[in-house]
Structures are given as C-alpha cells and as structure tokens.
Image 1 (spheres, helix red, strand yellow):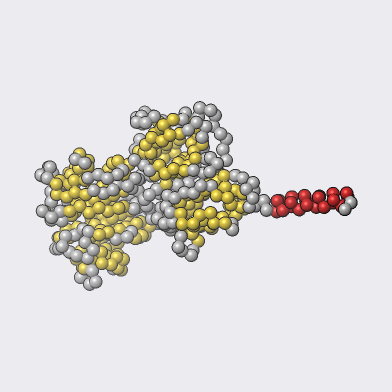
Image 2: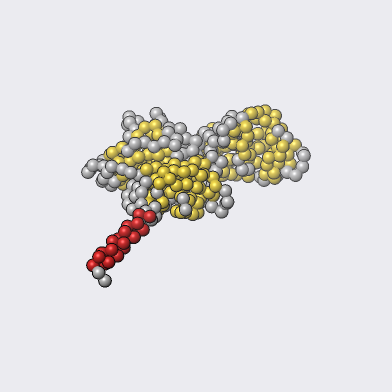
Length: 429
C-alpha cells in the first residue's frame, strides 16, 4: 500500500473519531449537566423526575435527596409526577450547561406544586472561611432570618448573618469562619426561633446550601444542608424543636394545666378553650394534665413523639373520673387562594359516630369518637354546620354562623355530652 493511501486512511479514521465524539456530546461526561434532586413537596408522597429522555429520580420520598446525576445539557424538559400515578404535576423547560452542577428542588403542595433549579456554580471561599447560601421553599412561610453562632450564644442582641429570605428566594453566599456552629432561624425582625439545627460542623473552604422547607407546621420549618462538592452530598438537619397546644373538651371539669416531664408549661385553660402553640424540644415527652383544683393529681397523660418541626394538639375529653387525652397530628398548611382549610374532630362523650354537614350538604361521614376528619377546603364565608347522628338525619348540634377566612387553617371540635353539646372552633395556623 502506498504511503499516500496509508495517510489517507489515517486521517479518515481520525475524522470519524472526532465526529463521533462531537455528535455524542449531549450524553458524554464533559457535555452533561449534573443535577441532584430534593423532594420538599410536603403532602404528595414519593415523586418521579425526568429530564429530557432521562429519569434521574424514581420514587423519591418526602425529604429525600439524591447525589448529582448526569443529564443532557442545554434546553431540557423537566417533568415531575407522583410515584404510582400517571399524571404530570410539573412540566417545564429549563436550560442547563454542560459540566455544570445544579440542585433541583420540588416543593409546595400537591395542589400547588412548584420547583426551581439552583445553580451550584461557585467561587471557592478563601482559606479560613466557608460560605453558605439559604433557600426558602417552606410553603406558606413569610421571610425569615438566619443566625449562625457559637453554640448556645444568645440571640437577644445579635444581628442575623442572613436576613429576610422570602418564600421561593435564595440569599447570596455569606462567608464565615468554620467550626462547630449553631444554626437557628427566626421570623424576620423577630427573635422567635422557628428552627434550631443544633451544632453543625462547617469545614474550611467548603460551600453549602441550606434548603429550608415545611413539614406542615404553622410556623416551624426544617432544613437540609447540601454540600457543593463533586458528588452532591447532603445531610438532613432536623430541627431540635416541635410545638403543641392543649384543648379542654372535658365537660364538668375545672380549668386544666399541662405539665411536660413534670414541669407546668400551660396553665388555667377553661372548658371549651384552647391554648396557643407552645414550643418544646423535639422527641418523646410525657404530657400530664391536671385540674387547677387538684394540682398533682393527673386526670390524663399522653406521650406523643413530637417530631421535629411539627404541630400537635392534645385534646382532653371525657367526664370526671374518665378523662383521656387524644393526640392529633396537625397539618397547618394554608389553603388554596381564596379558601380556608377545616377539619372536624369528634370528642363528644357518649354520642357515637357523627356526620358533618356544611350548608346542609354532607362533607364528612361516620366520624367516630375521638377521631379527626381529613382537612377540607371551604371558600371564605360564613357557614351553617350541622352534626347528625351517623347515617341518620337526626341533628344533634346546629352551628348557624361559623366564619372562616381565606388562607387560614381551623379545627372545629364537637364537645360535651348528649343534650349539652357545643362546637369549639380553633384557628391553628
């Protein structure tokens, strides 16, 4: 074979390899975008996420997160669906760059889902510093402030390190000295702590993204700390706090106090009334209820789990000598635009199951004793609400003027004994 022929074949091979490499750049490591996903969609369960022709996430549970996954770059269709379902709840086209890292956060609620793509392109912090960005995806929240301090430091005169991170927004990166530090979040321009991550170790010259989300509390939030590194590691940093309220629904019982692990935290709650939420450390506690007339004599006890960043209602019901504590997990997310969310709780004594009619239409069937209904949405208005014996048209209580406001969450309790029933409406958000 002539030298000219050999050289010709060599250049053809080189050209073929080069063209093949260019033509496959969308799926090669150098041409791919790198995306990790977090599911902060509070009430929808596991999700699937597809990006273009690829599905980097399947069955990712609430609070779940992935490492970086390779997907095709440039304009790609991002689709989110509920695992096990057939419908798509988010469908949008986003632009990504090759060999660039992103965090894709799905949040909101099943009825109002949304997502955003955060760029993890950074400039490394200087030696002796780390940097942190905070993203607020806590549905229903207002702005909040973030404090990163020495463990146990007072916030009374401290200024926030990051201020007024509003819903759907992210702060810029703030550089701080590394070490073991306490992360706390307060309502904006307030010292009311709504998140306490405890002591977290931040490393020198590392960048972090604190993604803050809701678990359904009226005020409390939770967080995941993402590291912006080569793999996309992240750590769920559960808050150290929870909150609960006490509802007095025990007829013929004097005002009550609530003790947590032996210490009085709520006092003098009269019949047919409820306290506001009280913060306590997350985790198991013993809640003891006593009357103000017989301090030290427990009439009811409960040991709820008090999960991080959640709301709990403890309802005392029953007649004297037979009182009990009913524990309810509260979901205090706001309703859709123009609507309130309402649940019904049957803690009446010796009445049995009831049906609940709103403006004379049945909305809840056979609500048993000491049970709560699912939340329903009602437009802002005033309603006639009837409680009927289950499966009959026998009305046992009529409430002709129950008013609810949009974007609020309520519980309507049926309390008392047959012939002496009442409704107690609490606003829980």
